Length: 77
Figure 1 (cartoon, rainbow, N blue to C red):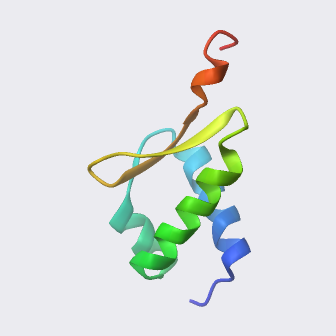
Figure 2: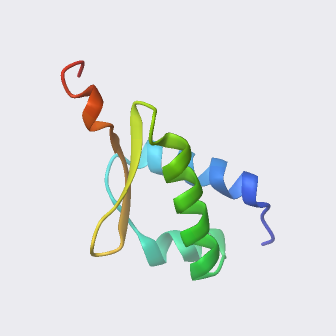
């Protein structure tokens, strides 16, 4: 499955949003049928895009990925 970068980033964001829990990197990579580097680049792009919003993208040491609340919004939520 060939997927454009913008579409990949949008789909990754949606998947992280609805999951409610950390997703395993390799599972996400296989789901989209992309390379490790493609997923890493998409995660980094999305992470940078979201860093000044209410949602952040967190990559854990065990290579799980999750959409999380921005710590700056802690008092509001």
